[in-house]
Image 1: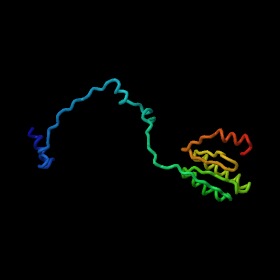
Image 2 (image 1 turned 120 degrees about the horizontal axis):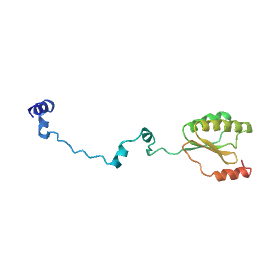
Image 3 (image 1 turned 135 degrees about the vertical axis):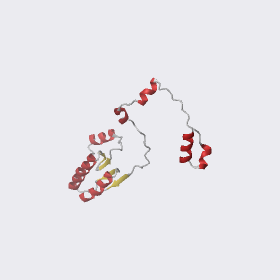
Image 4 (image 1 turned 180 degrees about the horizontal axis):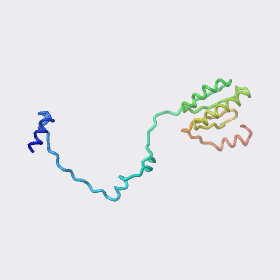
Length: 147
């Protein structure tokens, strides 16, 4: 014990001597069969764990009404920033409508999103993390010749 006291005095300042308690062995809990499966996980089980992350980001929707093809770059920037875009093509020429749609479909696809018609000359472009409900309405619009 003399050696322990000497080491303690060397490493611990004098004011901490009062709190010193020698280490005592701690009880070891036996591992039950039900606990062993929790301890021994395979690498695949570790990779497939789902972690809940509370997102505080707000969903942003941008309404755009482009007239020329050069406006499509600004719309693409919104899509890259994971914003939902409502695209109104009423004022664009026929040639520009086709070019804008083709370009934005490519941008949406590259980012995992999608473009859906919602009314005559109006589309919604959603990023990959935004779901779209109302497929029946889109089908009804197509069947009625609106789109």
